[in-house]
Length: 235
Image 1 (tube, rainbow, N blue to C red):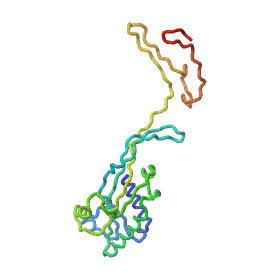
Image 2 (cartoon, rainbow, N blue to C red):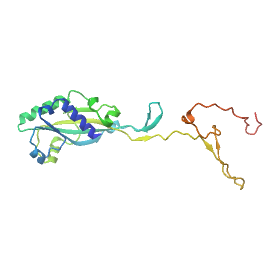
Image 3 (spheres, rainbow, N blue to C red):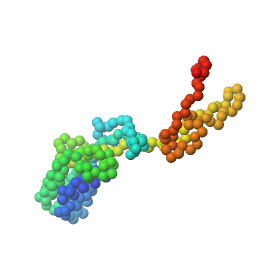
Image 4 (tube, rainbow, N blue to C red):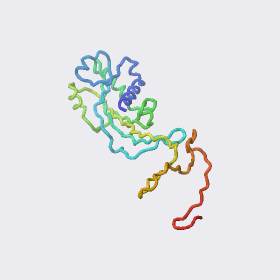
C-alpha cells in the first residue's frame, strides 16, 4: 500500500506540471550527503512516519462473490494508516525553492482526497477515499526540527503532508463446491456383530457422476417411503 501511495503522489505532482519544468521528483531522505550530490532542481517527498488510525479499526469479515453471486471468499476489513511526508524543494537559490514549494502546496490543497485515477493496485481495488491533509496545524508525529536533526541537516522550509490510506485485509478463499453428496457409514456393532456397511448415500441414491452442474443442478425429487413414528406403527 505504501508504494501505491507514493505512486499516487508522484502522479499528482506530475499532473501539476512540475516535471515539465525540469524538476526531479524523488522520495529520497534529504540527508546532508544527499543534498551535496544534488545537481538539478529537485522536489523531495520523504516518508518519515507511519501510524495506524485505531479509531477506524473494524472487526468481522465480508463476503466476496463472483459474477454469478457465488461466495468465493471472505475478507477482513481494511486497516487505516496515516503516512506523514516531509516535502522540500532543492535549488541553488531560496527564492526558487519557495516558488517550487508554492506550486506543490497549490497542487496539494486542490482536493481533500487523492483522485481515483491516480490510485493503483490495492488502492484502486478497494475503491476507498485516500485522504490528503497538507500543512495542517497540530499534526501528530515528530516535529520538523526533530526530523531535520535525525537527518543530520539544517532546518529549512518544508510542507508536511499526511495521507490516510487503507491497507487491504486478509482474504480467506472459499472451499470448492460439494460434488459427491453426503454419505453415511455405520460403525461395527458393540457386541461384535456385523461390520459397518460400505456407506449409504443420502438423498441422491445411486448417484456416481453429478454432471457438469454438480448436485446444484435440477433433479427429480423422490417421494419418501413409508415413515415409522418412534414407538408407533408405520403411516
